[in-house]
Length: 145
Image: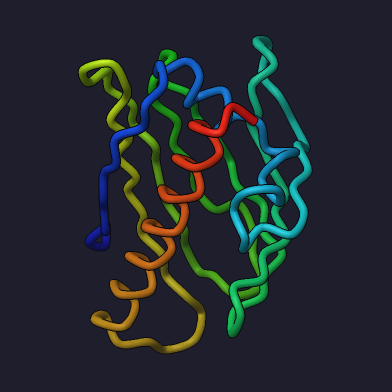
């Protein structure tokens, strides 16, 4: 498997509150910036999304993709690419751990685009995606929205 990029952030909220925002795909366009539409295509017996269609617009990269989600307990979710116009692979995860009065969120991401791209540039793009997502998640959770 290719190298992944990861980053962590502390959010002043309980892990369940953070995961509640992560699992609320319908609201992604409200706080993620790059996600313009999100539609849950399939859910598990507990009502958690198993497949989600996302319409992305990250400036130079626009994509319509379907991701498959796997939930591990209450504090971890991972995803993998099912189909995409622009990507060959996309694997990621959020792992939550209680920390003090809040939660440490670690986001890991590996992206492989269909167009040729230098590894260094790809890692920088992954880092930007992760940092924006974590900042948006923190703002969304801590605002209580």
